[in-house]
Image 1 (cartoon, rainbow, N blue to C red):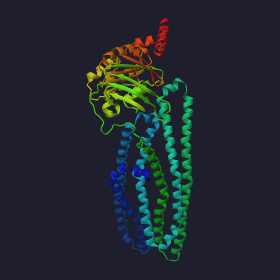
Image 2: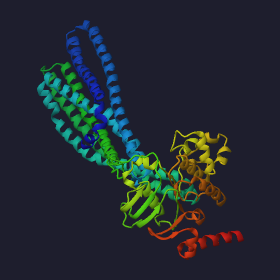
Image 3: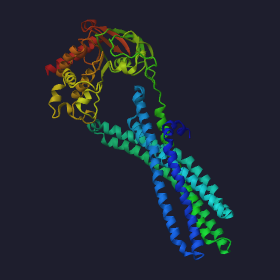
Image 4: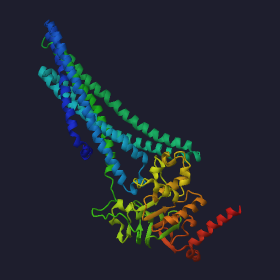
Length: 581
C-alpha cells in the first residue's frame, strides 16, 4: 500500500465523494442481503402456510426496495466515478507540470512512447481502481459481513459446515495476488516499449522509407509485439490456473450446503425456505470471494501503474530557481566564462574543459569546430539547460545560478539546429515565447528572418495551420519560422545553434544581412559549420574536444594557418569546385 500512501495527496482531498459512494453502497448491500430473507418468507410463510393474501404486499414491498436500491446504486456509481476522475485530474496535472520542469538530462534518456503510456494508460489504470476497484473491495467486505451474519443467525452449524472451504479459497486468492502483480507490471512495461516503437517509427517514417527499411522496422515491431503478447499469455495462464481452482473451492461449499442442509430439511430439522435463503447467501460470499480475484487484478494493475507514475514524480529536478533567485526584466547581456568545465551525467568524457572567454553586451561570438567539439554544450549552460561541472559562468556580473530561471530564459532567444513547430497557426508559432506581442511585431520578426515572403504566399497567410512538427513546410521554411520566434521575444542574448544549416546559401546571406541589424545591442552566439556564417563575428572561437584551441577575428585566424584556416580552405575549395563544374 506504500504506493497508494505516497499518492494519497491526489485522492484524499476528494474523500467526501468516496465516503458518499460507500454510504450509498452500504444501503445497496443492505437491500441485497434482504432478498434471501424475502425468499424464506415467501416459501415458508406464504406458500408453506397458505397465506397467499400476503403476496401483493410482499411483491409491493420488494418492488419498493428494488427501486430504492436502483436510486442508491446510481449515487454510489456517480460519486465513485467522481472520486476517481477528480483525483486523476490532479494527478495528470502534477505529472505534466513535473515533465515541464524536468531538465534536459531527463529527456536525454526518456522515451516518448513510454512517457505517453504513463500519462494515459497508467493514469487510467489508477483511476479505474479508485472509481471501481476500491468500492468493490468494500462491497466484498460488506457482503461477506452481512451474509455471514445472517447465515449464523439462521443456522450456526450449517454456516460452519458451508464455510469450511473458505480458508482454502482465501489462501488461493492470496497466492494469486503474489503472482499476478509482477505479471501486470511486466505487461505495462511491454506496452510502454511497444508504444515507444510505434511512436519512433511514425516520427521517423521519412527516414524508414528513404532507406527502404520497412521490413526491418516491421521485424522490430513484431519482436516488441511478441514480447507484449507473451506477457499477456503468461498473465492469462495465471488467471486460467487460479480462477478454476477458486471456482472449484466455491462449488465444494455449495455441495456441502446441499448435502448437509438437504439432510436437515428431509429430517424436518430445517424449513425449505431457510435452505433456499442459505443457498442465496452462500453465493453472496462465494461470488465476492471469487470476484476478489478481479479486485486484486485491478489493484495490481493500479499499483504497477502507480509505481511507474511515482518514477516520474520522484525524478530529481536538478535545475531550479533558488528561493532567493534574482528576477530581472531586462539583462544587459554580458556573458563571461571562467575556467568552465562540463561533463554530462552518466558519461566519463568531458564535453568542455577549462573554457574561458568574455562576451560584453552587443558582442558577436562565432563558434566553429567538428561535431562533438562542445559548441552546443557551451551555449546550453548559459540558459541553464544543464549545470556546469566546474568553473564559473557569469551573466551581467552575477553567477548564472543566481537568476530566476524564467526571467533568465525570457532574455535568451535560442534557435536550435532542429527546429520544432507546434500544430497551430504560423502566427501562434512565431508568438509562442511572447503571446501578447502585436501582429505588427510578428510581421517584423518574420521579415527579419526572411520568412514573410513565403508566409504571405500561403492561402491563409499567418493564420495557416501547420501540420504536426511543421509538416508541409520545407526545412528552410521551418528554420526561418524558428528564427522569427526567437526574435519576437526581443532577447538580450541570442543563440543561433547552426540556425541557417537548413537554408540555401542565398537565403543564408539574406538572413545574415537581416541579422546584422537584429544583432545590434544583443550579445550573440553563432554556432556554425560554415565559415560564411561566422566570418563577420567580433570574435571566433575554434573548439576541439571541449577546448578553445584558437580565437580571433576571421582575418586573424586566416593568418594563423591553424585549424580555422584548414576548414576555410576545405570549404572554399569545395565551393570553387562547384563553380567550376
